[in-house]
Amino acid sequence: MNLKNNILLEALPKHIAIIMDGNGRWAKQKGMLRAFGHENGTKSVRQVVEASAELGVPNLTLYAFSTENWKRPKLEVKTLMKLLISSLKKEIKTLQDNDIKLAAIGNLNLLPNTVFKELHEVMEATKNNTRMTLTLALSYGSREELLNTVKEISNKVKNNIISPEAIDESIINKHLYTQNLPDVDLLIRTSGEQRISNFLLWQIAYAELYFTDTLWPDFTKQDLYKAIIEYQKRERRFGKTSEQLS
Ligand code: IPE
Ligand code: IPE
Ligand code: MG
Image (tube, rainbow, N blue to C red; front, side, top):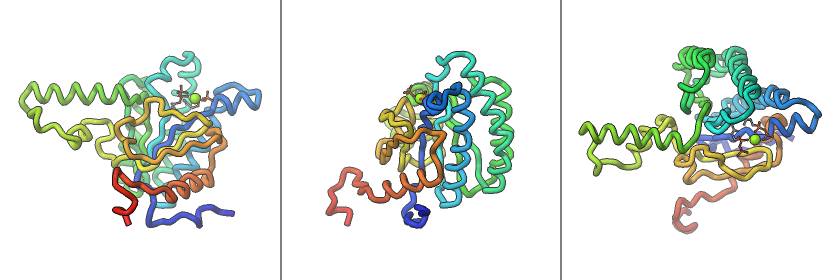
């Protein structure tokens, strides 16, 4: 059965964020190296990107590499960076065909030059696409993002560009890496882990959380539909009572 037919198109999340986890365990289960899991994970990326664009989800953000992932063995980091370059090269056509704009959040200056260059080329080439914004979180950590935000705002206060009294949520939003994105509506994490791992802490304040045991390389369009259907069953109260909503 195609679960797509059970989705209410008028109530889609405006921003889906995914913690793509479980590549290593997926490979291990098959007696393969972790790199094999990462390679197969890219197929799932294509599935969720296509499915989101087809449905009409305007924003999809994928956690591809965290600030903390720099602590992994050098060889694994190298493999992930290489894979990133080859995926960017390969997927530019998918992005153009589906009218998808690529964006990136994170401390991008830490990325190897080759990755940084390729990333900027694809972002430049797709900047006028409007159907969906696909944001890759790369060398991203929410605490690092918040530190960066505090520093930027402090500098503006010091230089009399902003008064301390004027600092509100919208000013903070404008200084985050995610400045152009709406809050996350639906956060998905695969592989059975039920934690946030330093992802979009400010932006998920009222997100619906969805955890699945499926390992990332096994995640398909149908799994995404399942998550969206579950999301649509939830009552988002934002602090109000159920009666106030109806
Ligand atoms: C997610 O899979 C990919 C990245 C974090 C880059 P993992 O590599 O974390 O896989 P597990 O959690 O070890 O199975
Ligand atoms: C989170 O996964 C980061 C990404 C998916 C890119 P990790 O595998 O790094 O998270 P922990 O270490 O299990 O919390
Ligand atoms: Mg993991």
